[in-house]
Image (cartoon, rainbow, N blue to C red; front, side, top):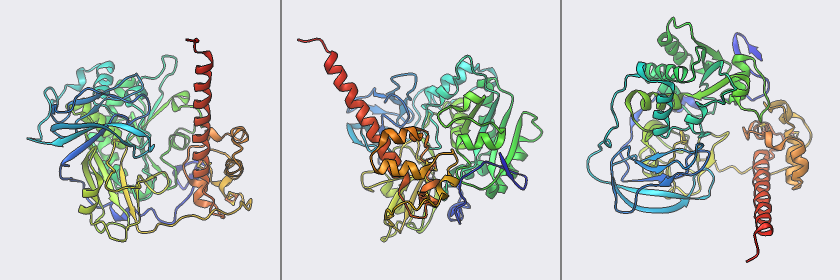
Amino acid sequence: MSVSGNLKSFKGGIHPPSDWKELSRNKETVQAPLPDFAYVYMSQHIGAPAKPMVAKGDKVKKGQRVGEAQAFVSAHTHAPIAGEVVDITFRSHPVSGARTQVVVIKREGEDEWADGLNKPTDVQNLSPDDIRNLIKEAGIVGLGGAAFPTHVKLSPPKDKKVEAIILNGAECEPYLTCDYRLMMEKTQEVVEGLRIIMKCLGCNNAYIGIEANKKDSYEKVKQVVGTDPNIKVELLEVKYPQGAEHQLIKAILRREFKPTQLPVEVGAVVHNISTTYAIYEAVRHKRPLIQRVVTVTGDGVDSPTNLLLRIGSPIEPVLRQAGLRDDAKRIIFGGPMMGIAQPDIAETTTIKGTGGILVLRSAETWASHACIRCGKCVEACPYGLNPSILSILCEAKNFQAAMEFNLMECKECGCCTYVCTSRRPIVHLVKTAKFELARQKAREQAKQQVATAPAK
Ligand code: SF4
Ligand code: SF4
């Protein structure tokens, strides 16, 4: 751990010249108009895709389950609006790009919850299993972008003890302010969400880590936590990627672990602020995950904003409402460091993991130059990797050698690409290499299946 003043921090990482959060940080969250159509992807999470449990022509109510989880590591999906199922089709996934099954709902009638939902519960009388079930029923996944099913994260292996829970209030990606707005506007609810997680995991030791550029939310959260001896609110150095699990755990708990290990290996569990608010909504009010706060920002829109947006909303009307500029060139889901560029504004809809839509007027493409071995990327990598060698090996398609240099431990955080003197597209090279390796493995498995299949 390193400390800047009395701020907690970690080794490596980068300091972008600005966080560009001033564009939207003071914009209170407003409810976005309901979409006319909602597109519910059956895969909005890590794990097995959900299976549609509705048919074309079915009428659905808000919050009704429309996709059923197909494995333990999977998540249900729900109708974000009331209406009629008008199609069950395949569309390009906004993160993976893969063709993915989608239930399309046309809005009709009143915006009414399905039976049994939107009812207050008595949290005091819920057992850890009741809490986990409500979270599973609500289809909650990690809303910081990873989209790992939350009920799985709340079911640690029996031989692993959770000693500390950390709420990630760092929101270290430049531009994004959705978690900041929740900490400012829904402080009580976020802290109650944390207490629900603590009860579920039977853990009386929690931390809320907030970057020092959000001092007002730090003060507000601290005030709501009050004298609770089991929750500590920590101020963190402003540094990217301060909000990544490894870096948060290093900064707050001073525990180190390998990039391939899970936080629970060192007794920790990390949850994001938006996820914690969704947990509060699901457990306290029986409301499934059908909407979330989304930051719409960047110099490509005239009025950056924070919207409470139904999941599955087409982005074009949202961006037009925010004053999409004619000279906007790039649309990114997420922030500039880890976000995913969206090629088609007319075809793109949000998913659970969409916490920000960044619109930029620059379409800068980075010309790739040879590595000059300056070492800046090695200094910046928060996981102790050698991005220079990785990029050279991946460029040469020498994937096996790249594996020996821990290719799979790269978290694709983008710090190396950001600092690279030669503007090398290191993350792109790493991602392409991983994709190619996954394809090779799938091909080999298919060949093996053919070779071992019984002759007809
Ligand atoms: S993208 Fe990978 S190699 Fe580059 S700094 Fe992040 S973890 Fe290290
Ligand atoms: S920062 Fe870029 S040029 Fe410098 S060593 Fe790393 S890859 Fe090479």
